[in-house]
Figure (cartoon, rainbow, N blue to C red):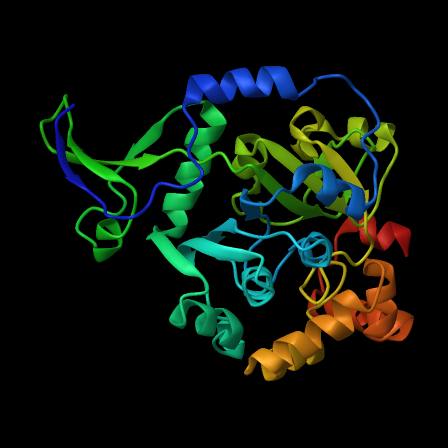
Length: 339
């Protein structure tokens, strides 16, 4: 195909499809085996310095904060992150110095809460670089191509925009119509982490509510860490097979972490901890405040359970559950049954 234009962004998270397929065949097993481990074990085994990482969920919703805090606790460095509507997770990781390169679709803001002082300051001072830009649709299609084993997805997305100029996409001449078409490159993250309400010990996971890009991301990632509110029996999963959003054979680790999205929201289970997010936004106005936050909430505690006790324990968590249930008058049937 004739290349008409190239975006100036750095190509990150891309592997040759044939090489990636060989890697999957050699490193991923379809054996139905117990994948349960601690979050510390999962991060130690699967997240390495220099990796391209991607976080599931959307904005402040259904984010695996347990993995985010553990990455910081273990001191990972020089990570590149998919900024696919990454807000609190990216802000925390950039502020900690773990992520120093980002491809951005939507980042550096906390939505209605305001901008992200820590990560914006890191970009402005050169401690973190925005190496490319894309759109939210662009990222979904990058993951789709990675999931399908294709080098790219053809789309009209990005055509005629400044976003294309800073992307890693190319515009080519469509061999059928002769018109310009944009090729968005595939993305296969070295590791992704996704928080779900329930899964079995093998990794078959269900997601309540909108999937966002997690269907594609889970299948595109080379390594996948699933953190879950609840581990259920295999029979529960098999009784409603159509609800399995993520199949076991793409999962590398299953981590039981109740409230593992805190301070973000877990749909139908618990609401945002606005008080805690506000504390981060206040402290992160300065580098000294950022360090104070991590000293208090990450480095002073051994694990996520201890962190939950520190932020208010059972009283705070029960309050967040009550707020979510009051906000959602049509709670899910399985929640009603459990109550």
